[in-house]
Image (cartoon, rainbow, N blue to C red; front, side, top):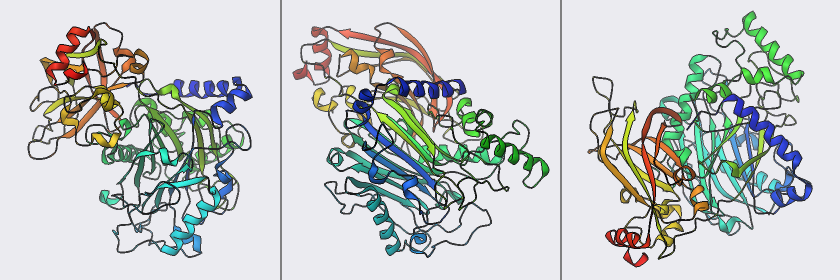
Length: 590
């Protein structure tokens, strides 16, 4: 998967603006207001441990507005909160002692790990919530109930809270329009702390996976390492990798990382990436004249809406373009002033002790072949919220549902994908040794949807295609794989030929599918571990010719090594198809 470069980022922004202008009002209403598209609101706010008093400036009242005209509404509202102290909403903070770093706390109140169900409003019965103590203290129930009521009153009866995940001062809340809530399936949550020792929940990420109208979605909210400087930048990148590798969701949570767990992944939060006008020189120390000159330059450019130089100096855009973090994710260059560090109580006045920066961000990523099904519509900072030293941000998206894959009917030709001459180079070392490390790799082949690859254990191909994500838990061992290559970071499978029989022969369906080559590290003493993932778009595989490929192996959101080989796409006529299905015990479906 190629890194998303700056030119593509800017081009995408302009294309989305042009598309919005070209649509007629009728087309916009059909697309965004009660039409077939899923309308998504993503909002993130570092609340600074203060009560949120201007909620309407950030989240539309009643969950309406923001697409085409007054009265249009959202289907999913995802809210990520950082430094969110529920005690502030009863006028009494639950703030612990500060550890000397201005933006971090040493004493978060609780963490969420394993979902625990409880009754919710509406027809969806499960809200995922866990308040397991790690510091000997729980949330104040009165304050938490007040916060629940605050959001419920603001969004009104048209929305149902289907997931509420908490860790320390971080929260991820997912609301769905009540009429759509019964359609939500495959609801899961996960979280990963990246604070001190990977235990303390002052930094980290939370995620929620769900499926709506056949479209799988993951929402991630995170709070990454703070402060300026090269070391801190690397810490932020490492935090992202840790979250991706530590949160396990989706049908194959051990074989596919978080960024490959759904059709579309939305990533939000206080990412803390800074505007670094000094790059590539070392960032000047805080309080020096050179540092203050940077502060004043950013303030001047922000006041003049001269954002292009700020984008060029933005750490996140630079790291995305270089492929050092969140491979495959996209974001629009913010056409608004930096969101941090501002004076509370004022609409937009920056403090001098930090270089104003775009710390608060929203990104998204889609599986190959599905990129065009997500259309960003709005990306804003909400300067009317005055309570924090951050400004909240919001982004809205239109997501075209992913149509179901059309199954092959008995008697039709059978499609087959054959991989051969596979070899990998410079993959990640998961086992440490005196030579620096090694792995014992093999490749297991999976797909989206999982039932696309026929297996004897899955039975009826049509039923397997329709099977929900949760039904595939623990079934990765049923799928085709290579042999194991021991003690190497450059494995070759010269004699291995892996054949995948497909449950669909419909060309349009296959163009929306993805095959995954999951490189795993064999460990006889414990569970096998994921080395990295290669995503192969179905459209590119269905051309019917021999193809040679070389693609990056993505490890926790960063390319690490490559996989190459040959792939053939064959169509077996009914007689040959019956023979192959018979070998698998599926003769009745021939």
